[in-house]
Length: 373
Image (tube, rainbow, N blue to C red; front, side, top):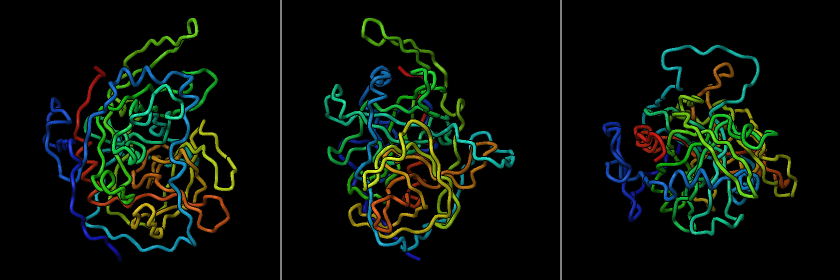
């Protein structure tokens, strides 16, 4: 069994770490303490501005973000990752003291949706900066937590977190411009939480992030004289509306998982089987993946799946129950793989969730947000 030696943490200049379970509901992201290898940063874009930015026209034109996060390899034989401590789990919202009922069909989780953002420093009026990924609501003390990949919150080219970041759970592209697309409301980012080794070293073994979001709002858009007008209604906490997946770490790399996401990009050969308009899923048994120097990647595990760009950030769910639509977050869609050289992606991989992952999760899971200012 292989376990990478622990690295020296190099905190990002200008970013202040945030609180643990002892932090109070009135503490802010910029003034509480956290492990030195956890990087936290309040969103640069005010929440109201982020929500108002994403008009139906812009939502429609947003493109899948992770077109270049892919690897070609010969086979999938990799070196297994070893736990760096005892396994642990946090139950899904609503299942803290209950037993799940079995279901024979695959019901899509309400917790999974799309995140939208703009590239930092870019002109937000330029549609080339309008991007999206996938994500899921996850259990947290204040029911305000979204899990995704770090490359869906942080731009390694500019060393900045993305702007205009919002989460829409259960997104689907219905006939009505917004009634279909945001059935449970829109949730704007308050605080991003990621691992220092992704931000500093671009290390995809740490390609995970947890985002605290404000309470959601339901919106109604109306176009008047060529301009979109917005009315909104507060709908409360994310976890109260859609639930939240459990969280688990230091588990085996050989487990059965469901992977969910919104793929839309093309395969290397140009084929484009997905549109990103609706949620898709894969199911299979995971296995360790090979090293990928391009991403400083040594500890990923993956599942056979043809997902393309746009699915990044969606969850690997372990012990998923269709009846409750919940399971345990054991990974996130991070890198697409072509393992047989036929120019078609055939695997999707996730960083191995260990104690380092739990530190980032725990920091985020104990942070309060509340209503948008």
